[in-house]
Length: 554
Image (cartoon, rainbow, N blue to C red; front, top):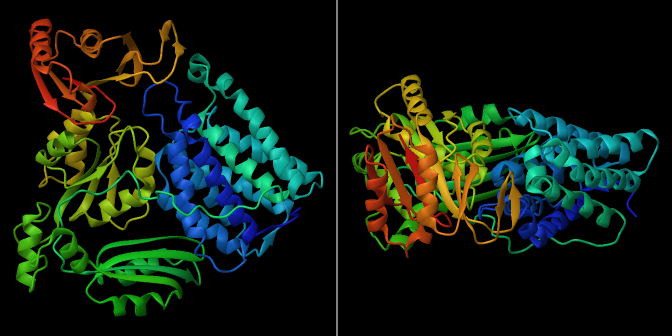
């Protein structure tokens, strides 16, 4: 029985949480409100926790403060989807509350849970009750109540667990869409894994070890052109700082290279930079703290091994400028462009389209696998532009993009595009030579004019309003809302478009995915042109997984 929370005990709780999420991710994913195949809350939370475990395992001291800082850092950078970002903020607030503590008693842990809730609510622009936020808040309130009555740590955490379970059962009463779908909140269900892990570890029921083979980096990847290696060394430093030194570190390292990222919380910071002079970087960072871990990689060697090319890096400054210019993100003199665009896209056909429209960098991700905060940070920091516009193209990526914006030194704007058609319309209005304000105005106007829809299939039975859905049914969604249920993708598409297209519309664009490979697409195009004769119809290969069609109407 543990009556105080130490670093090793907290590390064990985090590791067991990750294991429980791994075991239950499929059932948590299945709690998606609509029975579409992109319910990924469990997967996102599991991958977020895997990143937290990986960072926590680097801590070699027993201090709770040190482990909590590592968990906060790892979960922040590994956060995927809205649920993963909120989870990371719960850990970030917890870390702040236990700063400087070797161990924490029950009252201190209860206060730390409350600080985690406060931090998570602040991170969400418009908090919605009936979600993971509600479950976390009510569990923390129960913990504070028992702590106030003099309860010990196991009693406090048991109260938190029991209240979290009750709160989860109440989520459908707070959020009508959950009640209509007959499910509880997926994020809240995932959070139960943390409280259950805490009880199992604190009572000695289990001893957890860190997961050893989590696919932390799975799913998202930056797929931009290979950069010119003017700064060939990739340096990553984990630093225990003397104070909150993020801003000072950024300023000190600003002229040491490019792709600079400095993140941290209280007394720990993580530095990433591409540089010519790793020794200078290491010398500078030691002015702000003690190096815990440092890694230096020669990217020229990595690139030559990957691409089998001998001439992959320039021999002189002129060569560097030429190579940078050919990558499409810099001007002819090798300088940074004014504004670049980072877009989150999945599907080889869609990636090609976004590139042709001028996206500076593509982050692999979307409905079926959300990119992590770290992947978005890397894409933004490596984007050869002074200012960056991020197109999330999915509502579940917006929060992670907003977190990434806070972790880089560039000026970054997250345009809250909620679908591929919205992102594509915005990108078509982008001008690299225009200033940021003008681009944002034009891109926002273009995105708002688009109506968008999706055709996919049901992964479970359910009732949605007056609609009865069976597993395997074909579903048509208009801007995220279920509108059509049928048995044939083409028929569902035509019916969906009938609900979307009006007399003033001029263009219908269809992007067919992998699931549509067996359909007669030529016949579909003829039927669309016949049914909507006043519109120009375009059909393109999107290559997206699990969705037969993505639809844009303008």
